[in-house]
Length: 542
Image 1: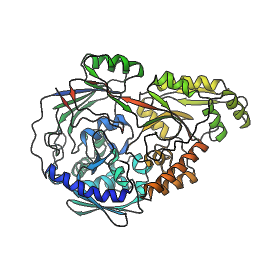
Image 2 (image 1 turned 90 degrees about the vertical axis):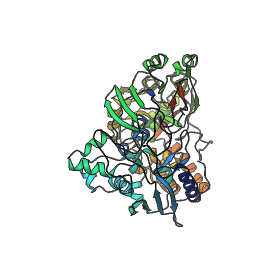
Image 3 (image 1 turned 180 degrees about the vertical axis):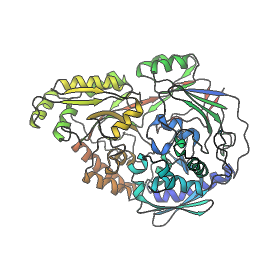
Image 4 (image 1 turned 135 degrees about the vertical axis):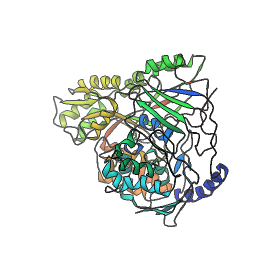
């Protein structure tokens, strides 16, 4: 992923892509899929199946990497970009025009609710992006929703046009150079929808069904969803990647309780499970029929301060609250040996990470004095939101919240712990209802902009910037990093931005964690995805 010149890399990718395309062949025959079932014990219900409007791994695992494809895609188990529905692409000399040559012979899925009459082509790409780009697009008017990733990364302002050149060529024109553009197009929000299906839904007055009954070109066909219970998929026999679908049935067994997920995988009621609790890692490792691969997590768990709310709009208050948290104790109790202390708004494995950044030391007395100086000698009341779900970046948000609550009580701050069902939690946080909240991030595309821009940029204040923090000196550096293709210059901008983050403290970094993936020994070639989701293409069952 580390590249010296992203534009040059994009041109090189054209040649690699062409070679990969010739190996894949133009069309795929109807494949015989092994009659095998894989059950995945997932941690929660997806909010829906329209990837453009969601931001969580729970949603993406359930829709993006089952039903859909993108123009370009991340390789399984990595962050390298490879050809997807585009078999090759070129970048203009000025870096502002990207021309994608689309794969021929790709079929949209046939389901009980949609039977395609044509194959994938440029119309589908234009439909997908115009819906996000143009608030007056017919489909967007019929089903008006937010597109948090698209807007958080400023793509609504960056992309000036998406044009069909011919049935298998699409041209994107950008307002300015954007170094991470190809990586951004590999992300989940950019999953390609069927324009024909969109037209059918609009004619029936059911545009919102795109979020309940998904249709894509991906490895698995959606069959049914029972909230808080199961999602059922069938292997796609017409999938364009030969031999990538190796199971005929994929079932998500939605199991919010991590302890129950452990019992299910032990009893072989599921063969893969999400997010083991730290306390379950050693017992699972001891199981004869279970493998426990792990790797350092490309993630960050943090406490966001909603700077639009008093008193956390004051820097001294944020500094005092941060200083009052015993992060070492949290890492010991919540992560139980599977976490490391965080000081930056990105993980140490991300290029441009500033290793010289130091967080404030835990000091309740100093924190109390700082609060008094800020005008709060007797403390104050505040809400502290705790996630209802377990994540690699935060395996136990309730316990973490209780520990922070106790730490803050020592400096006179009374924190009321608040929680909601996960979809509601995110929705209300986007609306800015919280004072402080526990949240986190797993990198999406291997680019620093995905941390600094997506979590802290001005364009993201109604999206994943839960701190609602818009600070021009910081934002100018993020914009500067986007419009140059030289990695050295980008690194300089991002290191300066990290210094500003540390001075202004819109959120308190808590920890980066190790990711574990419990999997039955029957399962072949399940990979840990560094970008935080699970995917089942290429996975088989003995």
